[in-house]
Amino acid sequence: MKHGAFILCFALSYCFHEGALSRTINGQRTWPVPYRRYDHRPKTDPYCQALYPFCPTGDRDGRIPYLRDTDVVEVFRLQAPVWEFKYGDLLGKVHIMHDAIGFRSSETGRNYTMEWYELFQLGNCTFPHLRAELSAPFWCNQGAACFFEGIDDVHWMQNGTLEKIGKMTGAQFNEFAKWAQKDNETGIFYETWTVRADPSQNSTTWFDSYDCSQFVHRAYRKMAEMGVTLTSSTKTSYTKIYLFSGEPSYLGNDSTIFGQPSAKALADSIRSFYNAFRPHQSPQNFILSLLEILENVVLDKTFYLLYNFEYWHLPMKAPYLRITYEEVPLP
Ligand SMILES: *[C@@H]1O[C@H](CO)[C@@H](O)[C@H](O)[C@H]1NC(C)=O
Ligand SMILES: *[C@@H]1O[C@H](CO)[C@@H](O)[C@H](O)[C@H]1NC(C)=O
Ligand SMILES: *[C@@H]1O[C@H](CO)[C@@H](O)[C@H](O)[C@H]1NC(C)=O
Ligand SMILES: *[C@@H]1O[C@H](CO)[C@@H](O)[C@H](O)[C@H]1NC(C)=O
Ligand SMILES: *[C@@H]1O[C@H](CO)[C@@H](O)[C@H](O)[C@H]1NC(C)=O
Ligand SMILES: *[C@@H]1O[C@H](CO)[C@@H](O)[C@H](O)[C@H]1NC(C)=O
Image 1: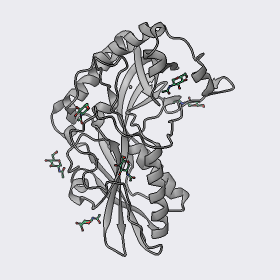
Image 2: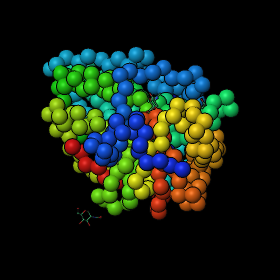
Image 3: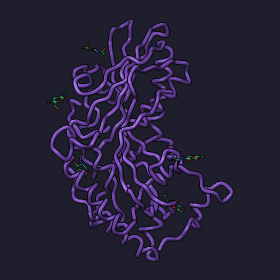
Image 4: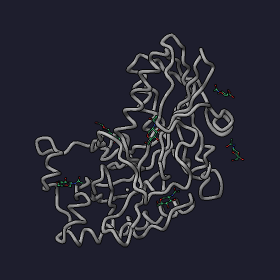
């Protein structure tokens, strides 16, 4: 990306809290835990300051041009390595890709890029800040869609993919745009991790990630629902960052854990878990933090995951953590 950045495109009682019970069906939890939708996107906290501005060339209000119903709009699959991960020994071995979607209007000749990524970069979506004045870890973990005019051909083609995968009518594009805006308004936080029972193909998924590639999959599904045919001549693979654990247990939210003296031991344990992570301004530090997690979870077999702004305990098991680049077919 031109805008630089590090985009891409974590004493336990079992589930007897009231809050937890309400999220089960007949006492059985459903896995994966559904990603929570909000009725609107809250303002970001002024504590969260982006090193690189989010969506610098996009429309401030996320407006998407309205195309004539009869227009023919080409759809492109865009993928490129997150540039920071291309350099250096350690980083070169990790295949971390960013995904986006391109559009080109036949009537106007204009083209557009749409991508979904972190407002405050990957490190901030993966590790919280421990602030002396607050008892709960503080997260700058919003992610959002960015729509802007132009496709940077060189960026996508040189080390990645720029492939036409389908076409739609202007009317379908306009419907897709409405869907994307609603998706953006209601799906507000980024989730780095996919948590599964083990690496085998059909193991249980406890939690799904919510990142740039998941946006692309949702968008393709929406297009397919509208009747748009998508085909690719190459394998469509995506980066996944996995954790492996036994059945997770629900712990609570900020007020039930960090607002109650009775939960002090748990609160301390969560804080010290996250305390291990260094400040994470660079991709090198991000990878180092991942390695530190690995060391921690191997020793303690414990990971505290935040999902839907609630904490879960993951009883970790080998192989603990894995970064893969695997195929997800077009719908
Ligand atoms: C935290 O959980 C409690 C108990 O389930 C619930 O009453 C409360 O509304 C939750 N707080 C937030 C901020 O979601
Ligand atoms: C992560 O969040 C902190 C706290 O707001 C901020 O200072 C830092 O710039 C953010 N990192 C990036 C890479 O945006
Ligand atoms: C999505 O939300 C962000 C944050 O409010 C906003 O900057 C962006 O323009 C929105 N994008 C779209 C496509 O609605
Ligand atoms: C998008 O538009 C720019 C500017 O006109 C052009 O340079 C580029 O080749 C176009 N890319 C695609 C994939 O249409
Ligand atoms: C492609 O990768 C090479 C080396 O990894 C780098 O020098 C070049 O700038 C990259 N091109 C783009 C457009 O990112
Ligand atoms: C997947 O599940 C099937 C039955 O549901 C089982 O026979 C097979 O061994 C499983 N595969 C793996 C890789 O665990």
